Length: 191
Length: 208
Image 1 (cartoon, each protein chain N blue to C red):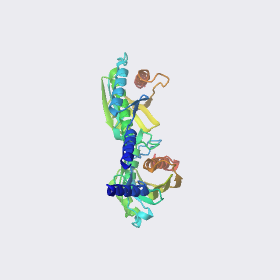
Image 2: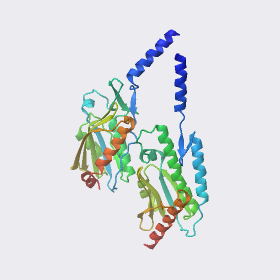
Image 3: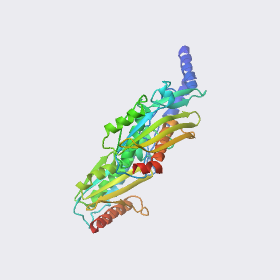
Image 4: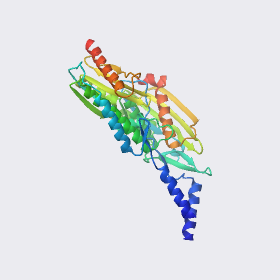
């Protein structure tokens, strides 16, 4: 009787232990499968990014938060998510930030894009702004408090970079973000 | 075989009575507050644990609350890395300020330190700081049974670099955090409360 109870308990625990990893509303059995799906999706986005016709002769610093900062600031921790869930969501978030950097490189607006992952993005951007023609960074204060920002020469005026949320998710939305970077560069040059 | 079954049953009974309430630790280390403003001022912060039960030795300085077993009996909860709560709070506040674009550093304290010593230490360690902020923790713990209750009492004092007080804010709250488990509701409450305090006009105006 006891062993039968133990077998049932092990079965229940085994079933409960089947973690699901979600990406783009599709559930995967393993983290690796979910990351592979994300990688494929990002590759498809990158393939749709074409070099610009408005090339800017300069270098840019692209600053994104590192994993520990993403874990501390970007994830909603209501509902008691496990450490494993927080870690997975943080990694997916990090990969999506890196993808923005790769898309910026593929657009070839700048001669060079220097991608940096740092603990405090605002400070790093401010401290290094004079070394580059433009600095693009993510101001990430909380899950609902994030904004891409840009500082460019000669006056180092800080401007938000907008993404057109009316565009379809994926490449169209990222292209609207890249368009806005080019508009901001024009504004910087005019002043 | 019978003996093994009796032993396993006994272990199961003890485990049920204790309600898995033994050995709980909460991770407060990612509870960074966020500011709605930035500042060019350099800030040094210190968190001073002055909880009565820590001062009298009844509880350790890494105590963050209790969870209750099925019978309602309380079990102490400590910080997950066993560091004093004041150190973790100081790290979090410092990280939150730095992440919001304000240059901040911390001075770690002991509950046995006097406030005068802390202020002197802050002024000496960070000579280029424009503001010194001392968070005095008079109460901070969560009590979890079916719901989690938070008991918080903090005093925040902002000083200039010459140790003259500029502003002071007192926060006291006893709050029902709902029926979530306290391992994340406690740290979330800390993040929210410190963010609220730092964004208060009287504190904000003395930092900007």
